[in-house]
Length: 390
Ligand SMILES: *Cc1c(COP(=O)(O)O)cnc(C)c1O
Image (cartoon, rainbow, N blue to C red; front, side):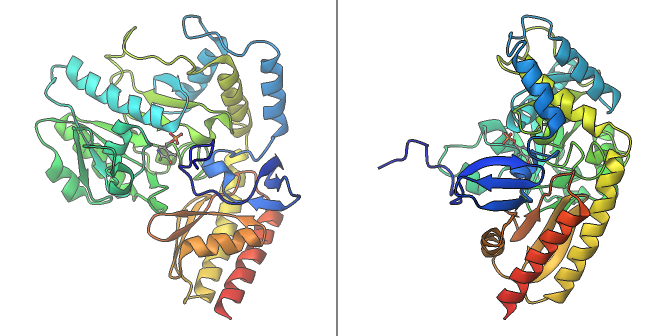
């Protein structure tokens, strides 16, 4: 008999109860060090006091109004994102998939409104993930997720991630844009090189295409800067953001330059919930914390030390682990043994982690993680590795 909750997930046997900082507590009393961060969402940890305060205050004033009204908190959050990125304008939705979906729409509309209605195709990369809507599934082209859902939506081409020659060769007279994750998350924690991102920018400029970055997972501080693209200095024309933007409250955003958003006039897009007062209160509270002086320094420092210790671990167990990769606190260990089994063993020992494509063990600690907590995680990682090898 089907469960009341539609059984689309293989779930862990942990019934969550409450959380505090890096720690997640189950109803049965078990306590876990949460290095999943709700899949890169709770960047500030669970129940950060400033977020709790901001959200409860907003909950007593106004939850929702619809976008027929001016929403001051939304204007404020948009202004802050504009001030801190390449973008000139922001649309708020409720998820990463919606942010990516709009990024694709903005790119097509730009071409349509600037004299190239024939340019509608978007080039995506193998191993990417952009969400579970028809268009975002088609953009990523992952056969596993498309299977059984009928013909994939038309208008998408795919090339190998990291290969500029393939990307250049795939550009045709109908190409509108390219969509790329500066660090592939689900696909196996694979950072793009600065040269690759620079090359994409050059291709976009040469052929009149728009460059879309999907920073839904790697953005909002995860790599040690507010957005991952900042490391390379390469700016996109459009960017999708979500996950950690609301610290756990559902909110996504599509950022764009004024040039790219030329066609996005009244009536061209909408969302009932998108950017409602509660959601933007969460987003503003997250930015309050992230834009404090020293916040990114903390991430970069702790990430460097964590990486060093993971590097030792990987080298100590060459029969278990093949390679450490990632950026900032978006880290992956490509495993030789099944990564999913390592995740299970770690969980049994109190450390929550994830898998990613390419048999990778994915580590996403909250950005506020302390060196002491990194130490506790390392102890568990070493224990599991030792026991596995024995
Ligand atoms: C999670 C993710 C998405 C989809 O976000 P949802 O909120 O699940 O729709 C899109 N792109 C990337 C890179 C992601 O990691």
